[in-house]
Image (cartoon, rainbow, N blue to C red):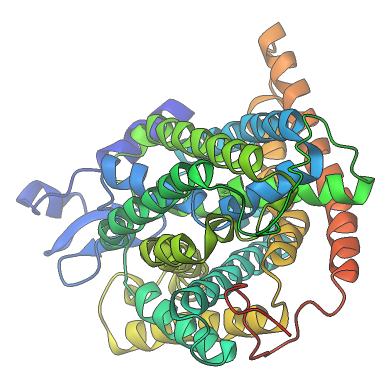
Length: 472
């Protein structure tokens, strides 16, 4: 069967419709809305795994890329300088946009693909699948852990550290469990509207308020102060690589984008939805990073809302909490959904509300919550956690597999190679090697940063992690 024919067959399953006599003759049972290569027969008495609209996809994609890492972007500018900071964002975004484009192409060519783990199977068989399964789950759960940590920071800031931080971490984990247990991305996308609007509003408030201040909140509040703004800074190799890893963490969402494509009503609309969300994300990354660093210089706070001062930091965090909660929801949901789909795939329980269906689903969401909670409690320094996640897993699961999959689909075994094919192959190899380099180098930089952070944070600590309460 040709690739085009498979694409056409896949598109035929998009429209949700009633079952007619002709459908029954083709093998559809009563109550079946459609057949999906991943989810099987989607029934009227089960979740609609193919209900994500184009607009819903744009919102959930944008929310997946804007929420956590962007809060550390001004710190990256401080490390590398204003001009290199913009360049790093643009270069990384070009790579990530290509990787996310390849997600859509892979899904159309291989309708049975649900996630990057299936890409691993097609590239390297069972070993590739299992290897990427571990990396994918760690990446998703680590991001969920960083979201829990960010929510605890927000709660500390809003309440001026009204109680032990460990309590806020536990509260964030409970909120995450309730949100991630929503069954389909179609339903999650409605909440993502609230999350996207809240985080974008908070970021815009930051960008407006910080320039209006007499001086940054972290600067000496009396007497002269030196911004020490640098167009080009001279970071150590470790600092530079750690900064790049933070940018990667902010933008590397390809593993989650697979699940978005899998649940879209019209997967052929994936690319245009992705490009819109990439444009929005890139604009905000550059805007927030450059403006906050330009006006704060060496006194940039991490996370970024701290640069707005205590009052506006509390306001910004209050507005941003729904957005942070939705970041936790999306990535934890995708991790739980992978385990759920893999456990029940090929059975009636995947798309039908049976007892086994519900027990498995809540076991998956509960397990992801517990692991994310442990991670957020064990690594209590937000910027370090962001950098470590981006270094260890960002490129490894978002970029490297996409380069190899392009080569498998377009170059290996292709006897009609043109100059465009060769150029595409060169780019795919470059993307793959860049991902390997950033994984190794970024991990080194992040570990050095973690060691240098010393005793700034303790596991399961009650100490304020928002900088709202002066320490003795």
